[in-house]
Image 1 (cartoon, chains in turn blue, purple):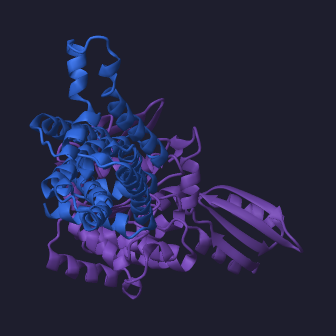
Image 2: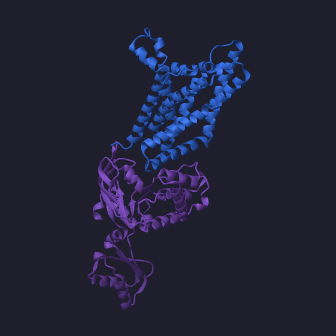
Image 3: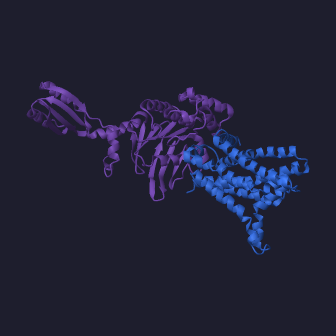
Length: 250
Length: 315
């Protein structure tokens, strides 16, 4: 536990004490604010019964930020250490492989959540200038953030896994982008199928990230997607652990 | 401290370490000497349980490097090749981080960080960024890291590579100073390094250990066919007669030098030292003697000879 915290502090420092961390946050905030401008333009044209979070969610900006930021956040985690060789000093220290994987994952998750914090400012601005208090129910904002956390955790576990596979940050970023995007697009497949009652269609509906996240943005917390996200995240973290251990397989 | 038996490491297509066995006793400084690509780094990586061996076993302090990896890692301080460090951290911050990673408590970390910084002479740069340090300082930071948890065994892969002569001296002195409390295994392809710092040397070539002995012993063994060279002012004829009467001489060779000086290369039987006898001869015959040396084989000769393909049987 102590070692985990030490490693996390180090990882966090590498995000927050370097320029790259702030560039990621700035870029994400810029794109999100762009989504906010689109949202305001929509609101000026017509009133809407949708919660603000949902209105924001249905602009494409949300997924662009998510799909692009996550690979950039995670690409360095293992790949950079392997490239510089510090991986060797780390792994020849008396630390468990699992601790290393968890430290990398949790610090990436923490950074990711910090990246979304500026959105609270957006919500506050809307709250300040509108009379529609109900559309900004704190519980809806809470559920949106829970959705952001869960989807993010899943994507980050993809990214950490991809980073553990290679020395090259570029390869890590591209592999995790491919993984995240394909899972995202898989959710749209059922709409192309002629029959939505088949087993395949049901299975695909289960991984429909867009719909799951839509529920969270509307303030609907369903345990099924939550379990889906958590179990997939754990699964990919275990895979990462196996990759890290594989160095020592005979 | 280290017991390696029948260790082999094969990468796809080539054998990096080929069935080697050796032991290192507690308190020894052992040098792993060999040209680049001889398998030194691979051996060290296996010992630090970073890589698994293809076959054979290696034990550190009685623990198997594969099965009891965590126990082994608690007992070793490993400085990998090229000394990788976090360049964006400050010296003190880095060492504290490393101490905590190695499981030391807050107070103990602080204590040990101060001790090793003092030991390695980096206290004056403790607040500088590692990336901005000179190579010599970086190397000492790496060394300090290896010493942090006061390990029983210290493994240093090419600790003096890329340093200037002053820095090399400082690092070597530091390594020698470790011998009192620790066992040290260092790898190098620089010969004087082994001669100066190590009590024992293992010469590796193409994945095998070709020679393993104390540095003194290796030199003695090489001196068996050592030569004595004398430059004397005497008629060649007379020299010939004198030398052929000496039973201890195996062979000799006389060649003319400038003026009336002759260069005599004498090879004695069983590596005997015949210098005194040559001097006596010169005195009795009133020859002028201007040079008398015994060519000592340095470790370099041994190294060159051992690592020459097909000649390994000679040593």
